[in-house]
Amino acid sequence: MEKWIDREEKTILNTYNRMPLVVSHGKGCYLYDESGKQFLDMFSGLAVNALGHCHPELVREGKKQLEKHLHISNFFYCKQGIALGEALVSRSFPGKVFFTNSGTEGVEAAIKYLFNIGKKKGRRGIVSLSGSFHGRTLGALGLTRIPSVSKDFPVADYPVYEVSRRDLGDLESLFQKERPVGIILELVSGSGGIEVTPREDMKRISKLCEKYEVILCIDEIQTGIGRTGKFFAYQHYDLTPDMVIFAKAIGGGNPLGGILVHENIDGYFLPGDHGTTFGPSPLSAAMGRKVLEIIDEEFLVTVEGKSRLLMEGLKDLQERFPESIGEIRGKGLMMGIEIKEDPSKLKDRFLEQGVLVNIAAQNVLRLLPPLIINEEEIREFLTVFESCLKKSKTNESE
Image (tube, rainbow, N blue to C red; front, side, top):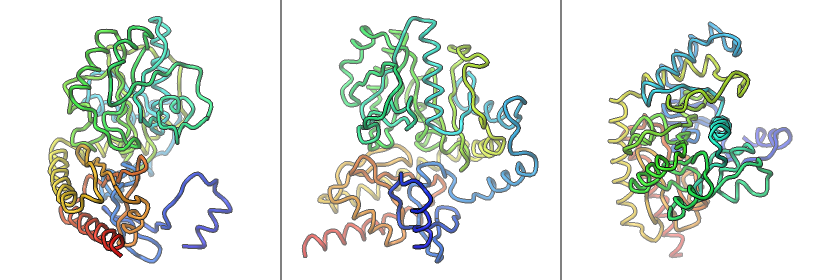
């Protein structure tokens, strides 16, 4: 392991604090290091590996596409992209799709689309909620309202209006005064600490958008493709957005993202307005189509069941270890646990016992396990979590 770490330090720009783990391979809900040690993966590539590692149907689909072509450029029609676009529309609302390579590129596409609408309607600017993470490219960074991420990097000269996620009292007056063209929000904040937007708040936002003709855009980069127990998280709410941004799980492990635009606002991108070399990659699109075939309505019911089992186990630990566990929140298999002790030490204890976890918003244990996780693996995680908490208690008493 040390030789690979040393080689990286000499070759790769240092932008990540990595775990001391060099991955050899993965299978199902587990990753393996070079020595063959097994690790239960409880954040699945930050929600990318929704079907786990090396899902046999995805492997077969990928091999099949590899024998045809990997890249054809946007000068030709891509059958795989067309089929995936049709499938996305059928699982959401009537509209059209633009494919990108990632979530932040999807946000960039959404910003440009909203800008074009604003030009036609005499509106300018986008509303974002506090604690939001929408990406790291400069346009998306303007919507990301996490100071440790946005820092003092330059942002596009385009107005962004921030509203508190927990207090929407100023939203109507902002709509009236500034006349923004749209609002982009996460229904469950990912990097912001798994804050779930209450139904009443979302109902109010939706009504205000309708009243003031503001485009409602939902960032489903992390919440989409079954993560919350619905295909898209907005389907938990009684609303239909004007636009959805998607990425992560859609590509089955390959880079893929995009925007889905409702037919009511179709027509604001013309040839030359936007583009991307690899959008979509035939390989990513083919695997994305297979992802949608697997994550059907029956599959989503199993996600809800697993969510209940995991939440019950977490609530039990919360009752037994109130000095270590604060609030627990989330939807489906997207959960956040507030940690009252040093979260980095807890993360290290998990790693020692063969479980991979992620920390968000400084003190929130973020769980994004593969959607294929089974009851035995959920109980394995809960057992290790209990062991880590007991070790914390023992250390405190010494």
